[in-house]
Length: 134
Image (tube, rainbow, N blue to C red; front, side):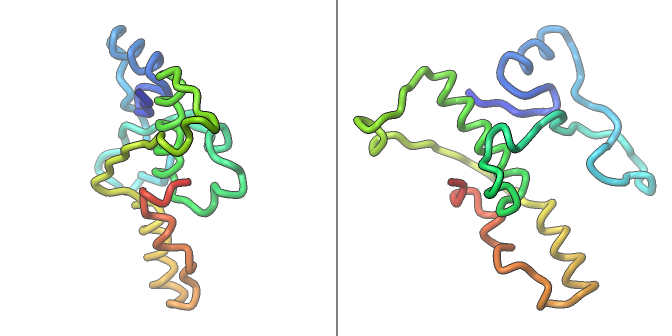
C-alpha cells in the first residue's frame, strides 16, 4: 500500500502516527491563508517530488500526480513484486481519483483572468489527467 497523507509519507510513518495519536493537522504552509477564517489544514509535508518523479517530468504534472506516482511506487516496493522483462507486460496499477489538480486549475484561472488565453499552457489539461501519469 502506498500512503501519503498529513500523517506522513509511507505506510510506516502513517501507522506510527495513528498508533501514537499524532495529528497531521497544522498551520497552512502551502499558500497564504492569512485572510481566511481558518489557517489550519492537513497538508502532505516534507514531500520531495524528485524522490519519485523524473526531474524533467515534475513541471508537466500537478502535485497530486506526484503523490499518485509516489504512492504507486511505494505499493510496488511493499508488495515485493519484481518487475522485469518477463512480466512487465502483465503488470498494471489501478488508480482512482475523484478530483485532483486544483493547484494547477487555480494557477491557470488566475493567469486567464490577468493575462488572457494566450498565456494558458498547452499542457494545462494533460497536467490534470490522473491516468496520464507515466
